[in-house]
Amino acid sequence: MEFLKELGFNDLVLHRIINSNDDSVIYNFIMDCDNVRDVINYFREIGIEVIDELLVRRLEVFSIDISKLKKQFDKYNVGVLVSLINEDISAINFL
Image 1 (cartoon, rainbow, N blue to C red):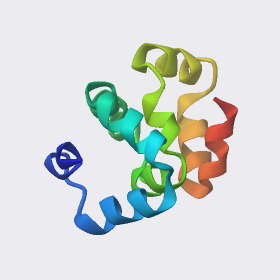
Image 2 (tube, one colour):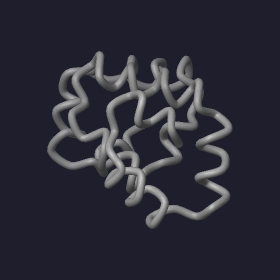
Image 3 (spheres, rainbow, N blue to C red):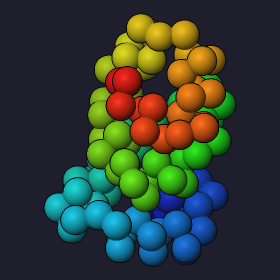
């Protein structure tokens, strides 16, 4: 998961990801690292501030194809949805 360090995530986040997710989910996450990078960059671009928590508690979100994820966000008022996610990550369930 070195690619996460390149994106600015620290060892504590990586440790929490490993301890909070099944090995198979982590394996798929690592194998899909290009899409994961795209999702992280998109989340940063639209203003999601709780990416660390999403990585720990909702790792599967980062394996959704970036184009499909963007289409899902486009169905909503992105600003409002981002605010909801930043307040409570369970709002990601709207996607």
